Image 1: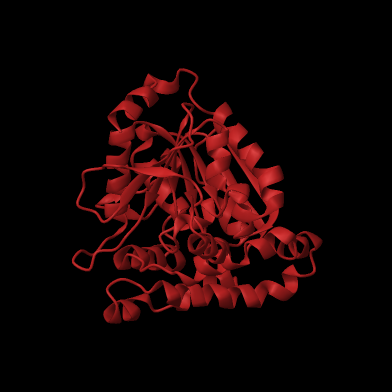
Image 2: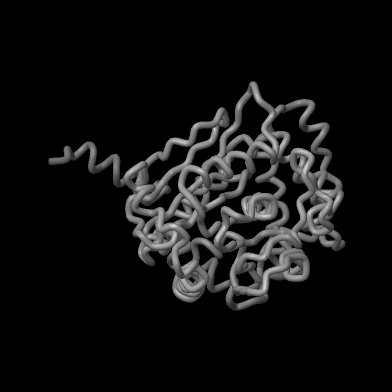
Length: 341
């Protein structure tokens, strides 16, 4: 029986709780400060590997059970994994290291449908282009690809002196990047407020319930692997290398036209971070014959945690992934992986 003190403590802390789903660590033998987790509520269906952003914790995908993207996938019967990033004061971690880790993960768990969110989506594209044999399908959420437009959401990255910041900090303080994000939100807010769907989202009872959880997610900004973030700013915002197949990882060219797996590209209509045109440019860059887009009337964060997204968007996404999973399950390694894990 719980003590009154414990019940009182849980009541006070409940509005701050995140990472709603039970999970277990899966050992992946590398020297990277990363971890792989498997969700206990998952099923034995298609294996899904979540690749979260390097800029924020992946909590936003599992905020609480009622608005948890992870739970939607578990309830749909998928075998769900999440990569989690970290920093090392002794090692300068770049995109090469992150892609190499995903390859080690794939060798550990087998082929999967890959799900990338924002910068995690860019990492997913790098991985899929370089190691296509490990990817059954690719789902991207709010993932910028083309950085050529004269839009404040792109221009800030061209002006941002990441190399000077890196002279002060080996790994980038997440608070700096979150401050930029807040500024972009307030810049776009007057325009977004003219749209009923956006106003309805931010004034909904669910938004009020999750206010403290969202605040914690924004406030608890992790250190960002410095070399990877510099490669992101210099290679994407300044060089626009990704969409032109000119980005190189460990000497290898990242050619998006090599990607021919099924792709579902999801974006928010009211995104203060990523312009829609930057996301849709992917369609003409890849070779996939099964490429689909969803432009959903939501915000960058609302894609993950709004009630409307969980009612109307995520059932479509999970159905799409199930429909595009290999019919023969390519070796049916799920049972083996569960025994090995």
